[in-house]
Length: 374
Image (cartoon, rainbow, N blue to C red; front, top):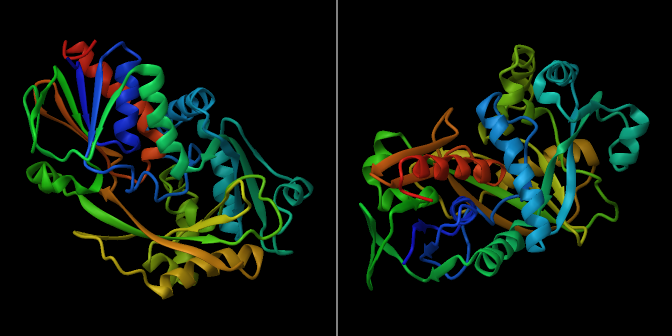
């Protein structure tokens, strides 16, 4: 009855459902939850192209952003912000931005003059920055809404079947086994996210998959608009597209001295704004073999300190949450063959929203080339 079974209805699973359905496959998506509650909705909804690792990952992000724009129009998903503004608080950060502009990754980017920057980010503290870069390649959706709208559209426009509240007990050659019944298909793609160790302990253990825990905040509407999402100096030593540039070494040395607490908690500033004016600000990164359920006030305070360095006193915190994702140091994703026609696919870099659509196209193309998918 089905050509492709996708296990997991997060953004990575939905991306694979779309890629398969666009080839004419009959697709079944199974998920244990009634709705998405994991990493796919506990994030910024920020589809980041600028700063992704040079080469294949950057290309995945470029392709995925194009898919997002097309899907958003078709599925009624609002793009609430376009572009990205990277602001440099230190001369060493400005040097990284200038070096980035000399690469092919600067497509769609420009350095901003002070007048243009004040129009883009009118609330910046006077003298807070020394340089800024504006990208037009990035975009933001409200992930809590977008994931559900994407699933509804896949069912409506592409005939994708969803079975929710169905926990998969085992993935086997040619299908999956649940508590109630088995399902068969020529191709199976398992997209379990950071909880995949329960079903795939060997693959997770042998590939060194960890769990990254992060903290994020929603702030009350400040009474002004950010024209784009914002990132700053710490992002330039975290995102490989910047951090791998030789000029980033001097910035990293200075930040290790001046931002010791932020670096210890894996903090770098991302600030985005929702349609209602509220701000989503984060985030932190702590790695281990499990997710601690308790948010730490000192980490929240350290995140807010990064905001305040650019914009002054932070608005009131109206929401706090913990997120988690699968992580392999220095590796974008885990894509492995479990059986003929069966793939395990986990984005292990925290970039599922930014790269999953293109990654899924490549995975489905590979299965089709082997005769397991249309």
